[in-house]
Structure formats: structure tokens, C-alpha cells
Image (cartoon, rainbow over all chains, first blue to last red; front, side, top):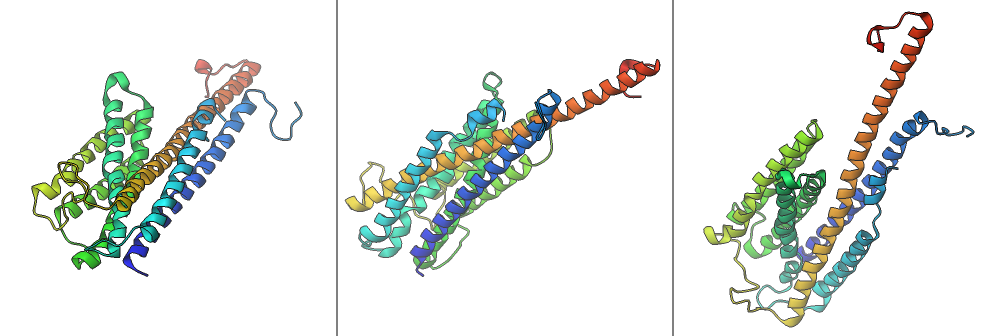
Length: 53
Length: 265
């Protein structure tokens, strides 16, 4: 592999991996927000999971 | 999900910027590796210059403008908003990735051209210092503190980091460096490259700038979500505490012995 190929491969792979990591982190925090909102919804009187309204 | 979190996550314009950036980057790679001719002096090694200066431009100028500008606007009382703090923090994290790539791609070009992977040249050293300072900023951000205290602390740190940016920029003028000065454009803006090379160079700048905006936007969304989760957790704790207090008051009232202040004994 030449220096040029290595440079392009490292740059593109790093940006790709970082972008994927951001997508996964965003999903994880969206899930965390949904989970943290569930107790509040129950405290407000909304039916919890599996409960009848 | 709270309105604020919904507002800032999954924005279509950001996905469009990302798609454009990826397409432009694909064209840059195609033009840079297969279409443009080899350089008269450097041969194929010049192909690395279609991405290295563009990556360095993002790492230095775009990140510098967003991080320093955001920090200044946060510190300024009239414009103080966590929006600026989050934006600056997002820019610094993305900037650390681009700074590291600047050093790696520069090193891969320097080894065959200069004969060394690394030298303590003013441009290289100040860029490495920039990366270290950015990592330090990210560590500082993880130190537990009140949101306002953390934001103020980080804004000051970002402005201190910004001092390094003109040093990196002018290092090739202020000191005798192995790193060359501006060779693509001279002070009269006369381009010293063939048309295909110039267009590829320009496309690389556009592609990496779009990718920077995309990554910055995604990182910003994560900051918003993190803060929203923190707020929710605080609200849940307060609600639980309040309901415990109410139950205790109810029990106390039933027994005819109210607890002092109506709170927990």
C-alpha cells in the first residue's frame, strides 16, 4: 500500500467510524430520554406499560 | 420524548448536508486518485494534498470560528445561552478528530517527501499542541459541575485554546520551518496548479466542510439529548421525593401526629 492510499484509507475510515459512533450515541441518548420520561408519565397519572387506561 | 429533544434530533436538512458531503467526498477521492495527473515534482504523492489541507482547514479555521465564537457568545451576558456552549463543545470534539487526521495525513506525506514521520517544526508542534488542548477541553467538560459553571469554565478554556490558532497559521511566517508556506495560492491569488487539480482541491474543501457541518450537527443533537436526560432525571428525583413526602404526611395525619414541617421525620 502506498503512502497516498494509506492516507486516504485512514482519513475516510476515521471519518466513517466517527460518524457511525455519533449515530449510535444519538440513538442511545434518545432511548435514555424515553426511559427517563416514563416514570414522570406514570407520576402524572398516565397508564404505565401493560396497564389499562 | 420532550419537545426540545424532538426539535433538535433527526433534522432533514442535516441528513441532506451529510449526503451532499459524502457524495462530494466520493467525487474528490475519484478525481484525486484516478483522474488528476501526477504532479510535476512530487508525482503521485501530491494526491494527498487534495485532502490534507482541507482537513487542516476544518481543524483550524472552521472549528476555531465555531468554538471560539460560541464560547464568546456564551460568556457575553446579552447572548448567554446553553445553545452556544453546546455548539462550542460539539465543535471541539469534532475538531479533535480533524486535528488528529491533519497530523496523520501530514505525516504520511512528510515521510516520503521530507524523509521523516515527525519533526519538531513550528507548524507541526503547534498543531499537535492544538490536539492536546482539545483533548484537555473534553476532559474538563467531563468534570462534574453545575451546568452554568461547566459552561463558563469550558468557554474560558476554548478561548485559551483559540490563542493557538493564529500561532499555527502564522508559524510558517514567524519561524523557519520545514513545513512550506502557502504554495497553492500566492499573495496575488494566482493559482499554481492545473485546472483538474485546482477543481479537485476545491471540491475536497467543500466536501470536508460539509462533512464537518454534518458531524457538528449530530454531535450537537447528542449534547441536547444529554442535557434533556439530565433534566428529566432531576425532575424524576424531585417528583419521587415529593410523592414520598406526601405519603408520609398522609400517614402522619392519619395517626394524628403530624411531622414537623410536614416533611419526612
